[in-house]
Image (cartoon, rainbow, N blue to C red):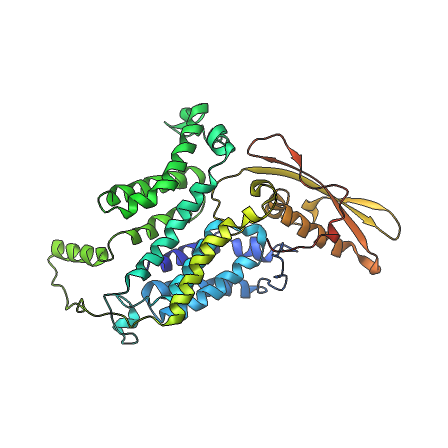
Length: 415
């Protein structure tokens, strides 16, 4: 139910803020993922209908109406939205995708759903424990992976990028002056690290669980108020109660009824169980678990630091770890005539795309190849090089890529 409501909230917000037009329809070019150049937004009103269908699917999920079909529609629609432009990537989009897959394969919608009330599904109050643990693991991995990623010098020694972010918010009432102190960012960084690495353990321990959840709420309310990072804090607050006893919703409803002195309707017998899971359900859940381990850790297989080159960044759940500012100019050379011209990316791409491609090498290469396609008129082959600089977490800026490298010859391989 919480997952479905989050889908509704995010898509309604997307429509209300005009992002369908500005992010999908306005750009002349989209910086696509390697291998997904064929994915594009539906033209015109179709793009709005696309997002609306995803919102309707979210409402159906929340209400438990044709739950599995609604989850299938959501996954197709949402993943398509994600693949339209790589510069729109956010870690919590990846989390929502994984949760959608997990809910699709598990027997959800067997309690308090319209499917049960209408007789489409047999009601159940008991499920195998491993299914509950699978849901808990999907939420828990976000905290653990985020904590491990914070084990770096910038975070632990310099207190960055929190130092820059907090200093920019020094005008906040009451707490603003504290944000200007150099020790504040360092204390906040260490507190964030300890929170991420230990909160799952506190949530699993029954005695500390209420206090741990209170810490979760306080932590995410603080980040939502300070950093405006979309729906991610609200998602974690709404989904983390999966760590509580599976009976807590029933107990809460019974408590509310007792206060209101309502007569409780006949309940489903507590011995009613879902059918034994088929083998393919167990295999699918195991596959999701493997993805949760391999995808965030794959950057260790690549040379260099993922913070610098972002090889293995997508799906890594590296939340709020870097602040990058970059500049780039492209030089296009006609191989037939030898003439060169400088291309400002602002003349080709939207400002929000430029901000991302200037600080992410994979998007810079994609942008260079788009510029090459636009410039290659009359069959003339062109070469595109980049003069690109970047500053990461306040460090002195450095060159992003060899300015002598013809970016049209670089393969866009998924990493």
